[in-house]
Length: 156
Picture 1 (cartoon, rainbow, N blue to C red):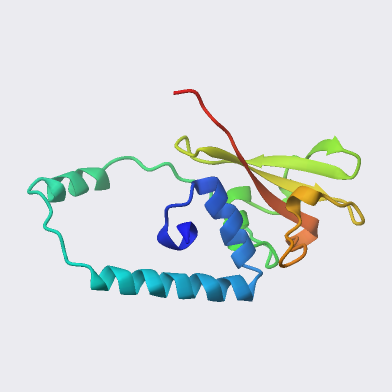
Picture 2 (spheres, rainbow, N blue to C red):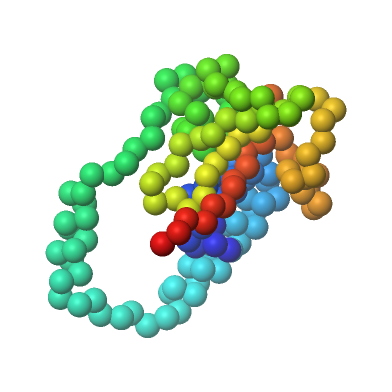
C-alpha cells in the first residue's frame, strides 16, 4: 500500500519496483490498491489551499534535482528500476566478494534516502534466507541478481 501511495522510502520502493517488473500477480495487486486509493481520493471533499501554496510549488520547480545516470545500453533482461541505477550492464558493476559465492554492490540513492540499496550476486546453488519470499519463492533477477534494501538509522 505504501508503494502504491508513493510514500515508500526510495530504497524500499526500488526493491518493490524491481520485484514488480517480474511478478504479474503483485503488479495486479498494486493496480487494485491504486484503484482503491483513487476511489478514496475522489470520495473526499476538496480542501482549499492557502494563498502561498502556488508560489511555494513554483519555487520548488526551480530547485536543482539530484539525478541518477541513465544507462547508455540496457540489457533487455535487466529491469528498468535496476538499469537506471546500475548505469550500464551488470558486466560493468564493481562487485565486492562478501562470502564464498556471494558478491555485493552498493547502488546510489539520494541523500534524503533513509536506507541503502545493494545488489547481491549469489552463485547457483547458494541459498540466502534473507532474500527468500515464502509466498512467491525466489524471484532472482537476471544473472541471479537480487536487490536488497538495508534500512539504516541515522542520528538526528
